[in-house]
Length: 178
Image 1 (cartoon, rainbow, N blue to C red):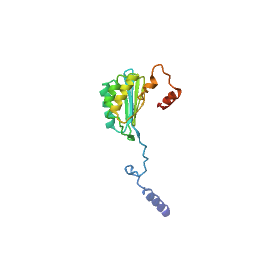
Image 2 (cartoon, one colour):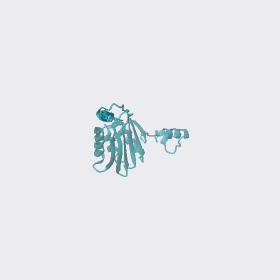
Image 3 (cartoon, rainbow, N blue to C red):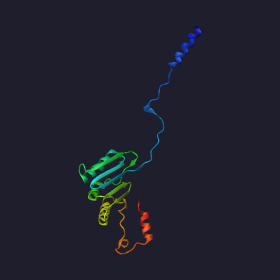
Image 4 (cartoon, rainbow, N blue to C red):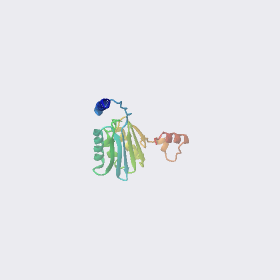
């Protein structure tokens, strides 16, 4: 009996000596840094209904973009979502966005994509509208890479009655972003 009592006391005392659980606030597990990426914004004018989506790095930038959309399109005309992800780099194109979107506003069937220092115009846009948008984009976003339909063909390539050399056509088509 004495031996059984000693064993029971030893078992009970060892059960009471638990190690404390780790404090979640002081978790020293290494964190993996996510790779940064360029903030993005897409704006599409589909028969007058404006759809936008994007990802930016903070709430202040999202608010500025939403204000630019509201300024250009008014309340209730534009719909979409702008997510916040802290890995997104600050966009260079926010400064001139409000004024530029006012130029883009009447173009139904057109789309814009802002990403990093590049801006891509696509959709159904007449040549004169493209020229006007390009001039506006150069003013609003100095130094931006204007791509897609922002790339205006040279006058020589579009002369009426003139055929385009196959090599020139192939080069032009291969340089267009898809």
